[in-house]
Amino acid sequence: MGEPEAAQAGREGRGSSLTRHLRWEGCFNARDLGGLPTRNGRETRWRAMVRADALDGLTAASWEALWSYGVRTVVDLRNDDEVGTDAAPRPAGVTTLRIPLDGIEHREFWDIWQAGPQFGTPLYYRPHLECFPERSAAVVRAIARAGPGAVVFHCGGGRDRAGQVAMLMLAIVGVPATAIAADYDLSGERGRARCAARGEPDQGPQLAAFLAERGTTAAEVIRRTLAELDVEGCLREGGLKDQYVAALRRRLVGP
Image 1 (cartoon, rainbow, N blue to C red):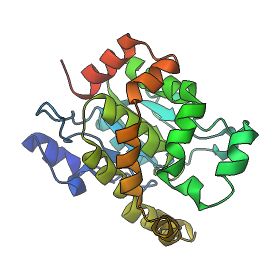
Image 2 (tube, rainbow, N blue to C red):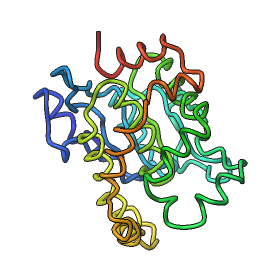
Image 3 (tube, rainbow, N blue to C red):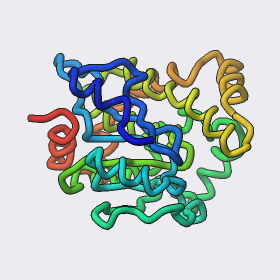
């Protein structure tokens, strides 16, 4: 809780993966997407973009810490039935946008992808993007258009829907696939802490075993997805215009 570990790393201009984690009591898997390398030798900005698990449980002190960190926009990727009552009021100056990513009403897709552990892995990212590019495009557009200040985007556990959005945005600004996959893997440890605090079983070992049976890992799935997928082309097909691609790059990397 309080000032995050990323603050020191931000002052130094770079940091290890551990320094990106944010200590906000009430959520467990929040981290700054700053300090990641890009292919042109730059780094993503600190205090521009944060991925997280659900913020409903944040304490008043944590909302204050979030505000002090510079967050002014929250993008909630969850479905309607997942949204609960906040444990403490949000600061009046924080804008919350609800943009459900799943499209859970499309049963032809979800009857297949919710039918097993694959739903908790990046295996569904590419099929989802190809079936519903407009849903990912709407999220990226909202983040690109957000007002001044940092943006937090979150789902329930902060791993898969947040992971899909993080993958797309980081790819757009030129972060290599290996770094994007490494960022995804950071949710494993944080997810265990979240499950322990909530008295829920940790699905991590089951998901890893499911992927291992198929001769792969979550990181490898992400790397392969990015190698085979035209991210910008897919999002443009979903309605994302060039101006928002440029705006996202200015927000996350700079001019």
